[in-house]
Length: 163
View: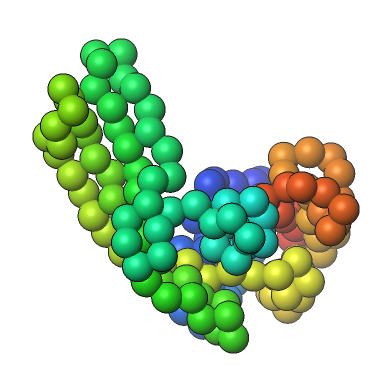
């Protein structure tokens, strides 16, 4: 493959560190020489994120994240309940709930675990290097700007090339 793209911060859903490292090794193995891996991770201190001063969702109870009105007038709503945050292990244990609401009544609901492991910029760069990736770039959001503490971005985008 010439490129592997992992969307929507889904890499953070691999909460076991050994499994995360194995996933990086497998991505590397599937890429052609010179191929690129692109993925984003959420910055846990960004506005609305779990370690920010104003996290979205609820601590121990359901809190609203977003809702969208559908063309038929129904509403899809997402909620999150943070159950615990382990700052040492960089692990968030949470549940997510999606609801379909029609005429102000919940007509369908799904609840599932939404545990996440967060990574810091240099930590992930070292994991990528250890896997064999080179020319590692970390961008602020989906921009050409490097990720630094001077920006207000909630997303780090990693671009890494197979040697």
